[in-house]
Figure 1 (cartoon, each protein chain N blue to C red):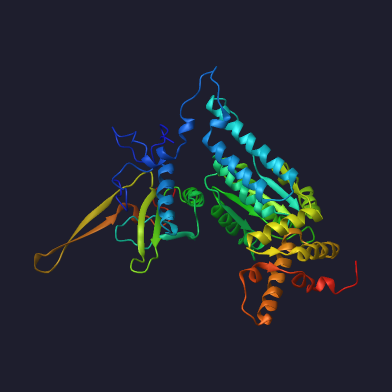
Figure 2 (spheres, rainbow over the protein chains, first blue to last red):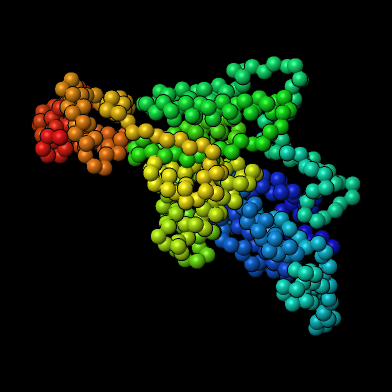
Length: 141
Length: 330
């Protein structure tokens, strides 16, 4: 099961050149770019770990690509995403976010149904990966 | 920059769609000149190259704006020709390794190292060696960290900012402090070395500094010295050249020397050059700035309506006011 997370997730995975082009687009717009990683793929998990610091005042994507590659080497089986933050007054939010790495195997999610009062049905999803403690999910990660 | 087969992403295989069309941005970026190869017996007119014309323009402005520095100009011209010929060779499909263009600029203060670096960036960009005609100037403070583990991120940040352009390291010899073996400068040099080695970076590093100290710097770091093929030394200006520079600066600021002022400035230079801490063109600029100050005071004290002529003229008095004339005759 392929996690559809962030922009471009329904496209074939981006190559490094395409990632660099997207990062260049963000930098041209004056959005500082940061890199985050996690091994908890739950869609509601918004607290990914920040890799290094957000990168300010760049003109070319080379520095970002170097950081992405460092992050990939350190966490070869984690999800890694690139964020671009638009700090303009009135927007002040993430302007672009897309995955640049995913684990080799994604086991998917378990849907649990919870019986509530008066036969109401509630649903929860749980990633099979998160049955392992953090750090040892996704085989070898 | 089309997508190489077998590298279709980071792990997701979609049958029937392995070869997505290359993004238009990447296609637009590649140089159209590189796309078709010329036949074996074709002839290529270098002057027809559009970027050659731009380079010629930059070189002409280098000649016009910078006084003297003949060896530097010759060297810059050589490097430009090298890149131009390299481009021509590629048109014929003659593969050769990308020339290494890291440089060291040595010379006294105020001899135009930074200005030449800016021009160099324009030339390298016109010939497609770097992606942007940008110079990121750093000194020791911007590269060396304050504690263990701080240096590497700081240096990498500077390199990331300069990516695709020129990294100009001013006073580079401060990076190496032999008297303190725990100095973090050595770490900076090591990181720079690996970055200079890699071809993909399109980064040109220029080390700048004073002649003698740079010589010790390079002799203490043989690895660095061997990776910097172009050593360009900037000679100190002669008295005549400094006068030319002064004339250019004065005209550039919409002023003019009157007859006696020019002679006075020439005398000023003779005295100033004999003094310690003379920094060539920079000293000339400062002297002119201070003359303007004295001119302004003189004009205000005149206490009469001023003409345009008053406002643009620097007189001998404005120059003789300098403290250089206070001391004994040199």
